[in-house]
Length: 539
Image (cartoon, rainbow, N blue to C red; front, top):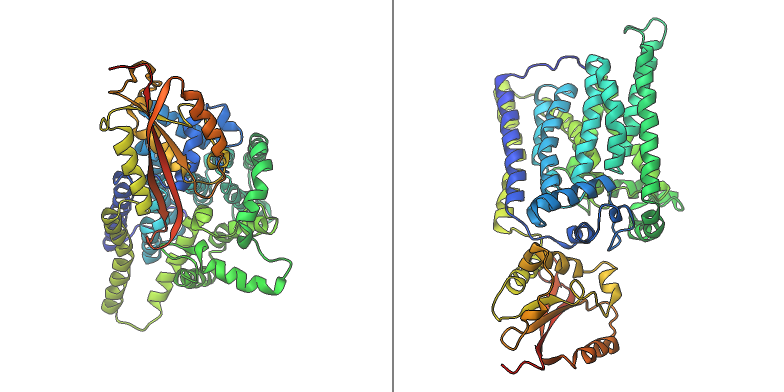
């Protein structure tokens, strides 16, 4: 571990600057394009929309689980500036930009030369970092708080200034409270610090003996981190009790097959070459093989360079993740979002692998510079292609775009005239409870209504006094085609309205949901709109 970071030659410095600008641009473009909320965001946003700060400490809607401080941040931002796509993603965007600068500092401590440039370039353009900097989920926070912890550790290792240990003692419990997977990074940080202090305390150690206050700071860090972890378990006990079995079933393919140990090597290879290492891009079916190869080369190069501490920081969280997967408490891979806490160190080892690969062939210096420039241009192209694709298709799926467009047209429209009301949100009635409890695209419908209904934005109730034949009552009801429905309950509700209102028409609006390719129909949901007029209105 170096002390003061080595300065980069001007060419390398310019590449670092270019990747910084590119990383900011890619994250900002994604955020500013104002994507419609997709279902995974909507599942969590419903709880932020409906619940008080106290209620966010309990079990959430739609089988969701998230750190309470993150939910409070989301709630505070929407209370302050309004409930919309911008505010719901503001925390992710701010932490995404901050993560870029934190990683630049971390990688400057860990690597030098072209390995530093390559690692930072991968981080700046990585699609997961761009995507989760503009998504209303806690995954971007996982990355940010992990980087805060890493920053404290590498700064202390480099300069041995005690203030970084005390900052770590504050950062570690905060990270555990803000991000469940960040606990793995905190655990790795604790082991690294303990090992370094123990080496310092050996007879004949080159460094000065560790001061008692160093051990005190380390002990305090562990004590506070443990307290924070126990606090999280206590706060989320209802959620964990109710959702752990559900999540284990959802993640079952991402737990090691310990009952069939001969399958573990292939399982591990599939996951490492799949979603776990999908940085800067990649995915399942060995889509991340290139990144895995670079990471292996980087591990070998760092080992030969005797950068054992860097390797420990990089690999210890992976080992902890595997341990939790064996215990069926947290998935290993399955989706890159679950491994975003490890993204910085993946970039470090892969960057070292890129630099090592560029030094192998017996090229002339001019040829080496040309190839290096070509490789870095290829890395930069990842962000450029990502921005172009986002600009051409500013949505995750066309179904999301259609759902938002209908919400804009229906809830904010004055034609046809009428008092627009939702059966579930405004009247507190539903005839398919699983539609609003289990995973369902009803969540997207609910958050879009909240965003695009001017009446709900004002916090106003239904204006019953205005309803007339000229301004009828329009009641919308979301139907999930895959959930049970109570038609008898619907008939009783209509009968209860009959003395006051006449039902003059119904309209079923398709809410078909397709996959990203628009080829496979996932569900044929629809919204039924009932139109009522008062029976005693003679106008």
